[in-house]
Length: 425
Length: 156
Image (cartoon, rainbow over all chains, first blue to last red; front, side):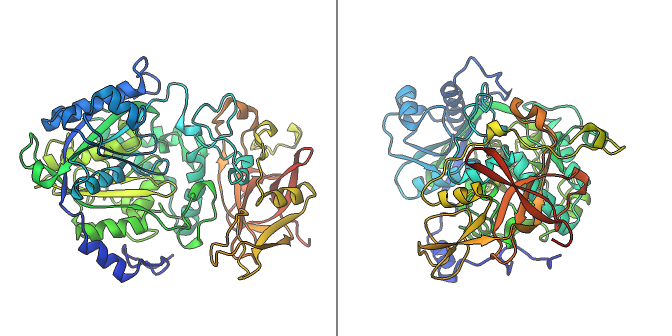
């Protein structure tokens, strides 16, 4: 076991130099932008959003978010996205939706870790005067194609999200690792080996998340999940069973970001972007699709440096976070994020959740109060941003009393993972 | 493995994902590895300047950024770094191939190079992290061989 360690003090992780971090603080984005609107389509089970098109889902979520903010499409002048963010691309979206002029359009790279970071990108745009009203958007429709096999060879049954063989994937695909869940199972197995983490700990993540989901009308899973259900479920990729995997769903969620100044006069109380970061250690790299990450952080969520920078910008400690919306495509990656975000020591997440710490209400750090990707809906992490905003407006279904600061994360994934910390006025 | 060799508890022996899913698309930097694999040789590229092994083969040394490599033959023994047991077929193509056991194997004396393959000649419950394994090339088709691993035999 490693020593208990807090974020920013892991001796195994090489540190950004002090000057670079100081520069982050001098040029900070902190509190210069605010989320003023959120909107979504209903969440659908995989394929059931048809016959709506992805572009249609994206447009509906965006219009709902603008309505929420008291703005219209004529106010929009920017799009800050990440991979797969749109039903079409910016050009088609602007043309179809009637955006008067696009002054900013940018996308985080990557494939799963960027939803929270895309709001940070929007904050960057408005804080530097490049745009005034920026849409961040996530749309997902899995009618034909399934993210669950996104690293499968592109065969007839693999579908469009399957990956064409590359010189790099040649070193993974022959093993039959074809889904992210199988790959994260490999990290989980080693977490268990190093730290004594058990399936009971994974079950606590799944069960506590379900307990939050059942109270929420938007959730697709509204029946309680029992321990018997969990242990009776089929094993997918050892040690991960059915309930360690997120849902396969369709839908769209949009977020509107503007300047802190302009946010004061809009319909909703502003939710300020307090800190934001994306990226990761360079040798985290493609992560689960190469498996040669350095031993020091192989068993991690890849988030440690991102957490450190997000906290530094926000000027807070993990203990200041009132509610943590942690990207939960697979239950063990919630455990590893609890460690990497400093809510517990490295390797201590199993006992930490077993003690009830992530439960709502009553836990020290309520996690995924909306039901997460595991039990509400999987819109690649943008539901976590939505929940952060609802918590800080005081309108959440599972409201954390007096919540002032919320953390939303995107990924574990290849670089970039991302995080945005929000605060209420 | 014949059904008669199943243990009494019915635990199956590990299978392998189907050959139809295995296609190689090498480039200038990986072709040497795959050509050696087809000859049942394991070679790993090492930077001629600083001696750092890099894997998979790639155009730059991640430590010193030089390009030139020497190909160092490896004995094909290693330890299980981690693994999973794929019990559920994610695609129709693999329905007849479960359980299979993707494994990450760390090679000794390479600065921690890890290969990804599948375990063979083993039952799922026998695999564990730290297990000593040896490479067995799986001949997929003419010119295409990929690594699999079996428990190391003592004395070899």
